[in-house]
Figure 1 (cartoon, rainbow, N blue to C red):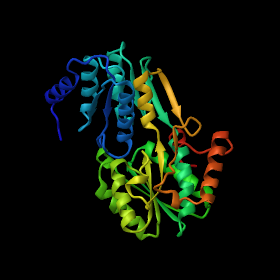
Figure 2 (cartoon, rainbow, N blue to C red):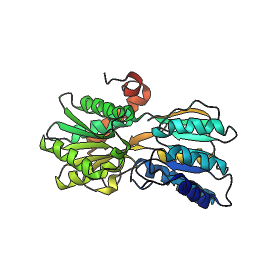
Figure 3 (tube, rainbow, N blue to C red):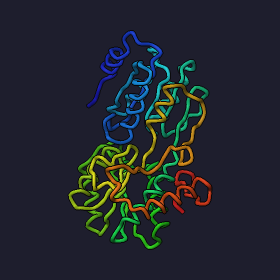
Figure 4 (cartoon, one colour):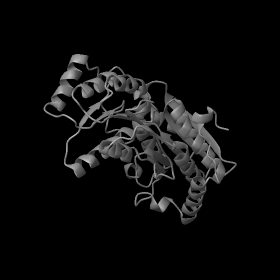
Length: 322
């Protein structure tokens, strides 16, 4: 859907009529109900709304040009703070935040160095290490897979952490990896996700970690159909295919948005295992798939990462996974 600037302005004006100094969240491509990254942000905003009893503004990006338009319209109407979801919002966030120095902004997954912007980034490689361990321990073939969304350094960061964890648990494990695409459409293509998963299953892979937004839904369905295992991302996705989802690499975007709505802190906030920003998910939907030994080993590795005894390579810091 291609919304023209005039229609965008009208939509935002309708949402903001009579509302000033309300927080705002701008979701990125894939929509707020992607069951993954954007939806985690939505859940955080809804938690704030429920606890505060106050409304907030929101907008779902349908094309790249809307990122800057939406922020500027929100700012013109006095929204405060304005929270942008996703690394792709970095440049537009910097531009609009400079134009409105009296307003507060926050961005997830990107760093904008301005005095009125809080940049919230995560140590995805640490959480991915843990689910990589679980994949290798659960695999019966010794072959595990990874399906990424858009081929960007951030997703390579997930992949690198996952591979390290898998090889930590089983040095002989084979890891297959595929990226969905090179454009934002890669975040919302379940059919392509299913195709990539089926191709990996055909090579003997029996556990796949999908870090691909809404595209992952197709991976999980393919895993269910093939009686294999899958690992979710960002939100706890264990409930999507109970019995198929080995676990989910939880990234607490919900907490980041909730806290930002309560008040921003300019500068960079880094959230890893130690801060509770990432983790693996264990609940009634996957409990029977996670053995006591698996949990013991993963929790021990988690403690060692927090203590600095295990150093997980950050792909984005080194631009390589070694």
